[in-house]
Every structure is written in C-alpha cells, then in structure tokens.
Image (cartoon, rainbow, N blue to C red; front, side):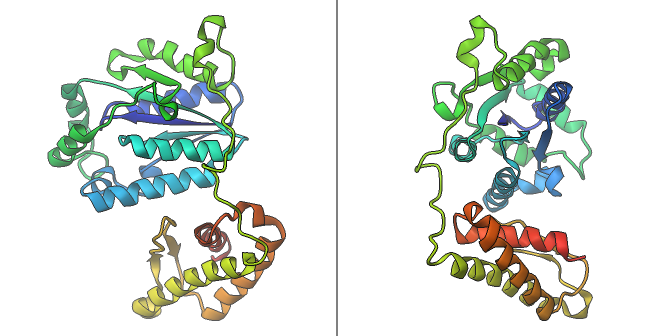
Length: 295
C-alpha cells in the first residue's frame, strides 16, 4: 500500500519511530513490515565504515524494498536514507510499484544523538566516533519542495512520545487518505508507474535466454564458492550486482542446481515473466527460489 522512508542522522530515534508507526498501522488491521540493517544481518557501524560498505548497504536495503513492496501492505524503511539521490531511487521504486510514499524526518540535537549512541552496545548498534562524525557531516536533509521528499513529516524523538503522537497519526492519516479537510495537502498520492520509473519487460524473443543466463550466473558463483570451500560447504555465497548473498548450510551438487534451474525456468516463463524486467531480476528471483528450496 505504501512505502514510509525514515530519514535522519545516526542515533536520532528512527527505530523507535518505526516501532511506534508500525503499532499504529497494525492497530488499523494493516500488514506492516520494517526493513533495517539488523533485519538483514548487518551491523550499522560496519555497514557505514567506508564508501564501499555504505554503497553495498544501500544496495541491500534497496533490494529488500524492491522485493517486499506491494499494494497489499506497508513497508517502513528504517535507515539513515541520508542521500537525496538515494531517496529519489526509493521514490522511483514506489512509483514503479504504484504505491504511496512519504518521508518522515527525525531530527535531534547532535549531543543527544551521541548520548544515545554511547548507550548502545559497542558490538551491535553503536557507531564509532569517526563513522558518526562522517555520517553527521554528509547528511542531506529532506526538502518538501522535492517530489520524492513529499509529503514530508518532521518530528523530534527527543521531545518524548506525546509530542510525536500527532505527527505519527498524521502519517497514518496521510497514507490511508483519512486526513481532515485542513490536511488535504499532506495526503500521500497514489503514485503511477511511468516509462521513466519502470524497466521495460524482457521481450518474448530473448526472455528465456535472459532468465537462463541470470540463473546460470548464480550457479556459476555457487560452484566457484563451493570449489574454494572444499567439502565443508560454501556457507555465504556473494552474488554482487545488487543481489543479496545466499547462505548455504550444505554442499549442493551441480546436478541438483541444474534441476532447480529447470524448474525455475519453467515457472518463470509461465507465470513470472511480467515480474522480470531484466537479467538482474532473474538472478535475484532464482536466488530467492534457491533460498526456499535448498535445505
């Protein structure tokens, strides 16, 4: 139904806001999912320690949003979302899916954010001083004049739950079209897919070849990882190219992988063609298929 993009400096109370917003939406009987770094088995400090790690982190978060977004439930992206270009990419995902989208900006003083950071566990969620300062310096604040940052809701988590409640209720009303007459300007509109925000689907002439090629790329990476690991099993297989890594608990033979590929090809060409706009999507869906069918 909608994508809620939380944005804010490190340790600005975004996770608390996400939990409170989830509770309000679920109170209306709506299905809600929160996507964040810990939910994808990533530690925040390591995820933003350098430009390469940060790029990979944003890619994994964006891929998770692409997989989860639909017209049936709400997605709350609980992350920094500190780059305006990245927020534009998220808005394009929402538009391509034909859902609503809004941005919730959490703002707290730097001293309060650092105090909250020091109260976290060092090995779990706490940022080092260098990473914290770098992220704080590079933060690009949302601007409601930009269509990808609108509607924009601002709140201050350090002021307490009572001060946040009216803003959070406004977010819920905006996404469910229940805002009053004076609030009509903040209703999140239903975004419509356009050619600019949607990838052209694979043509019938090369559909099977592209899906087969994407699946074969995945098999190649698995085979290479297992060859390096020996008899102990590959464990985590890195896919790259915006595709989430695959965790294997046991060695998988080439014959078994080929059998899975044949089933996936048959299933894809019969019922999933409209959801496969490019080769990377085929790779991503084959990895998800293996994740479900390889014990």
